[in-house]
Length: 129
Image 1 (tube, rainbow, N blue to C red):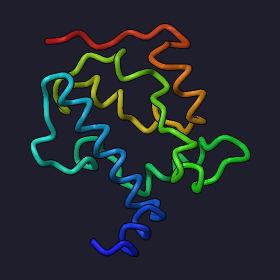
Image 2 (image 1 turned 180 degrees about the vertical axis):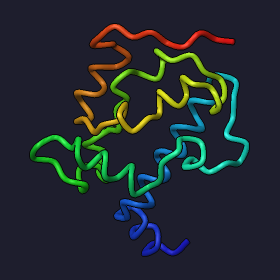
Image 3 (image 1 turned 135 degrees about the vertical axis):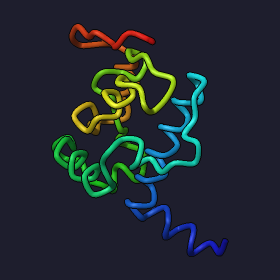
Image 4 (image 1 turned 30 degrees about the vertical axis):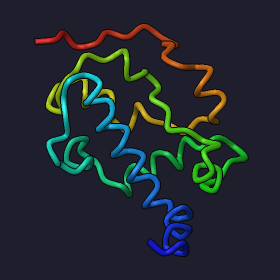
């Protein structure tokens, strides 16, 4: 690809956000023995790019912008960490709960890394069937 096209992609919120979500969903399924089976992330989670961007914008910490997200100063955080959920397939209830808009927010990268997989409140995952 020409360098100008790569640079344009690095500055394109839609391109970057779509890629991060797609890769995160695919990676978390693979680590649990599942897979996307070529399905679009929107079909798996039940919302679209516009709804995701709106939710993340609403949770953006004061003083930050989308430019900070593009430069990796902001991370997409799971309020209840992925590791707290029991799922191997996108059809599982816990997959839907894990990737629900209400469980996602933007956090400063350092804060998210410190938080890690800690739970701030009690949580009951679904039983594996």
